[in-house]
Amino acid sequence: MTDTSFTDDLLPKYFFDHITDITPEDLAAMGARAVAIDIDNTIAHDGAFHLFHGVRAWVKRVREAGIPVIILTNTFPLRAKFISRVLGRLPYVANAEKPRQKGFQKAAEKLGVPVGEMAMIGDQLFTDIKGANEAGAIPVRVKFRRPEIFGYFHYKKLRRKEKKYLISKGHGDKL
Ligand SMILES: [Mg+2]
Image (tube, rainbow, N blue to C red):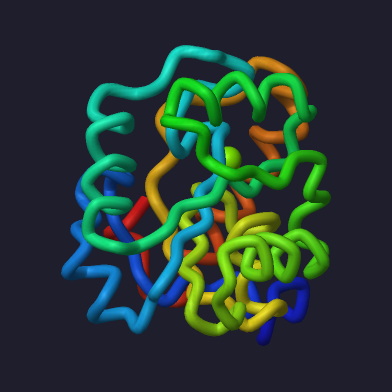
């Protein structure tokens, strides 16, 4: 029996454990000339202002390689602005309402690249990856670090769905 509750829009094209594992060479090999990054569980714990170890250096390295970086987040503008400052005044799109496409298009526009040449790095299949696929960006999934505190049950359910989906696609080793 086929489970029709999932679509291939949820499928990442590339998998990494952590954002800091992704090199500028990896990005170039993906055909990415620009990068959009998620905040929660990608560069910081959910709702936190403190960044994961190595994220600042990673952003610097990618930008120095000539690949512009933008924050694309569903979080509120003040938090996005704070994190953008910490990361060297990265441009950002807050309240992006991922998976809606408009945020992806806006981010690509701000960076001056076609959306098809922008990688989206994020932890969530239902927002980052689905949105990236639908907008035509390059979907890159990183592992989430720890369960969300805000909306705990909502996310627990989502993570269970993600797990089921990835296993069904033969990516059970990437959980
Ligand atoms: Mg996230």
